[in-house]
Length: 604
Image (cartoon, rainbow, N blue to C red):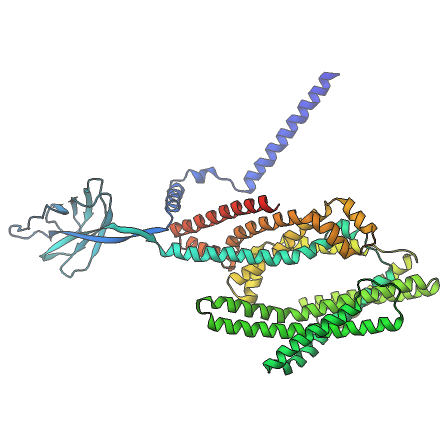
């Protein structure tokens, strides 16, 4: 019984080896592995030249001192006797054999007492003093050289000369222009990666909670609540945008006067703070009345408008302060420019903040109304309401998707991009509502989880080298495009790492905090955050290291940094300069690895 078993194992092993052999043989064919090219003398000569150039990075140089030594010669030989002066043998001198010759003849030039181990060109100098290079010389350790050259066709009865120019290093070494340019670009690269990591981390942290399955698994809502939330989101976004426009127009009356602007700033803060504190009490003894709820809603609306006014006036104040600082800080004017840019960024994102807040607030309110209807209304009425709301929600969702497709592909056919998608969405919503039971709740959390994961996977599959091409068109070629490209890829990469860390936390603290009746936000703050801070810090440091290395690649596509300079030198076949940039990259990456390991030891 054992022999067939052993035989079968041997046959299986042999077939596996044969299959592996075939796979790798086909791999060699597909990848066009050619060992013949590696033995080519031309390839080997080029490889040696490049390796030697890379081994001599263009970092330091010396001031060169030139030495010119010439020797007389007749071309052709004169009819009479040669009257050539004797060379001064106390210094560098040359002996030409023969001392005269016809054009295109070969002569032997021998040099003595030159600077050891130097090189330089050898010229023929006719009476017109035009330098005609005939070759190069290389002295040995004793300062001697011998070279055979061919005379040019420059016949003359006058005495002509052979000139050799050698150079030697004098003084202390100093940094080359390549080294200075490399230093500027490597600093740009480090801060490019720092900004990209900071922006990416700030946005990846909140996104990671939506991409964590254990946090989103238990988020469920009735269909009516989900439908009303979907319908309320576009309306909330529109309300936020319109509110920002109204407040912006009002703020223009205040920004012309400094006193009014500062007064409006403080008034906006106070009017936003106190109504919000009153409308959002920390604890309530008894359930508020309907009138009290309406009053609190009005207070929140006033607080929202006041917050928008405060942000707009605050951004204008920061821009003005930055401009003043930039004009008075001399060499530190970049600090003022930075402050002004922060104000500009805030003014740009105010409308996004207002739109997101409006959409979130209205969607949350509509969701609570849906839950109220689901609890208080039952039977046929609840079924009809769910059918209507689900149909409207489905029509709204697919109509929005159709509008996006129309914007991308410019179809400009409302029937295809609006009415047909809306109709299909309404039918799908009605079908979903008819199949759902009255007491059923849908896994809205898992739906959000899969949507966020799909978006992150899509972004992560696109290399920053591709992203930077798009951003270079938008903001121009330079490091800013690189920052945006790396930031977008950092968001996708860190969100995945962060969310997986959230999914691996201990469930005990999460269940304990949830059992106390804490809200979802309180659960995240008190049960999730304490467990994820150390790994989040570790992942962020590692991502900074990755961004430093990736910034060298995106420079090839116009993303700025050291990669842009490296690409130029490689295209110009200036391998010594490219070697200097590669040395700088290696030093920075090694330094980043050392610093991040030390920080992890202290923090993590």
